[in-house]
Length: 436
Image 1 (tube, rainbow, N blue to C red):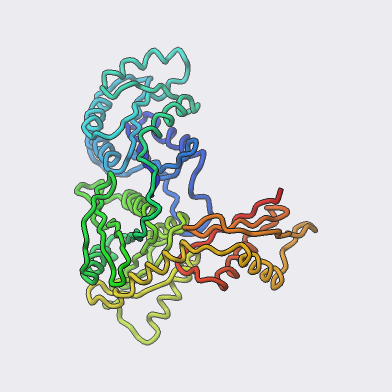
Image 2: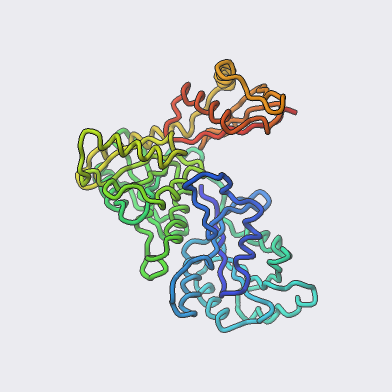
């Protein structure tokens, strides 16, 4: 199940970005310094008490030279489309403005939960000035100070009350996958070709509070799949058609809801920076990943063309060395019949569990092959390892000192685990913990 989404909406200069950074700053999901991983300010992960959520700063969207009122209307519409809860930011210093009233009318019609925040209330004497904001018709206004972090806890307490039910059906064996990639890589054509190949569409299910359509189908061996269609998410208007950040944001939402992600590349055009950014987010989200090179029928080939392209992918996507690569054509349906089986295999690897006894044998054999490193005369000691999670497979290694577990040695242990077990298509997490 994907995390709930909070969107921040409001006219310019009311402090949206300050509040966004305050909320997201406690726990930003993207922490690795890995080339090709997206770090857009517009989208981040936050955490409050036991709840994790995604947060969108609509103010970070560049929509060109649209008229002022049209701009804030479009930002409000983005929030309506994407959010489970909307934080509507106003300014206590300036009072209610015409722009605030315009946004309030749009949000009121949305039927989404809206929390009205009056920002820049930096001292207790100003709290009496928030009462005029009742005129917006959105319930109790919450006085906050983004610059000082005052009042945000009360807002988040209210926000989590409106999050969707977190219960998840653990018995559901349906594999959810999405196709992500920049425009013109052929996502729509692939979707139609995949469905045409299987010819067993059961139903069209509306995606939870989103405009995306999830398509359910069954493969020839009886495995059920839900395909999350990101290709059909673009809407009319410049804000949707011209904003790269927004297309990336929607891809992120699809990734959050997926078990397996197909990263689609255009074989005719080659690899672009946006391909690496989107794929990087799927990697950090811990999803199963398959790299799909589409439009292979249009590529002029010789005996080494496929090998050279694969080598280029491995070089450009070095952090995805575990992801299988498949060359397909939506037009000719070349190799498309192999995709459902490949997706199913990656999903199985994402859910694989290794018994602790077997895992510790692998770790001890690895240490015998390559002794643990030393730092300033102190050697890393590994006492015990256990698997603590799946999707992705996550291993805790108990050691004498966490800082002695260098990245290179952690990567060595990962490679030894991969040699012993089939983990193709899934990242692996190794977490060092000091033994108490």
